[in-house]
Image 1: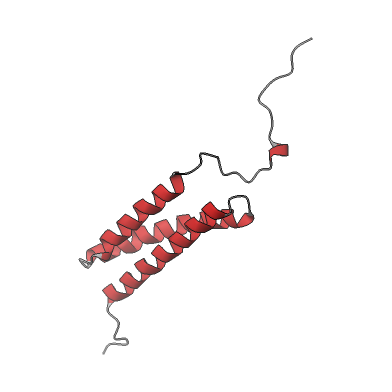
Image 2: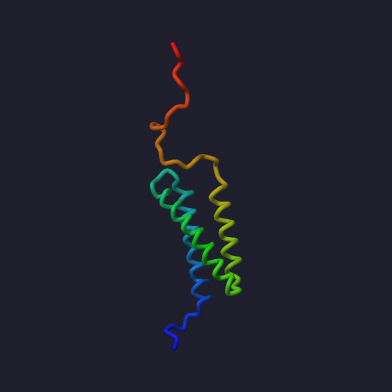
Length: 107
């Protein structure tokens, strides 16, 4: 007797779609507000979304679902979106705390 009428592959496909939306949302959050604490949360969520896409995309591949390809394509686009940019390093340390690498001249 089945306790649910949901198919396993349908649940996995829905999970892939949810991780895709979550990944795009965290990418937008990270790229649009880089100097706030939300950017750090977005980076953590971004990594979580990529891992989720990898796991659930692989599980969809076991069921011969096309969502495995969609998950891989989304991971590629998200990684390119995170890497491409202005070239500034995203850091949370304020500039006043950074230490100089120069040494004091000897007298």
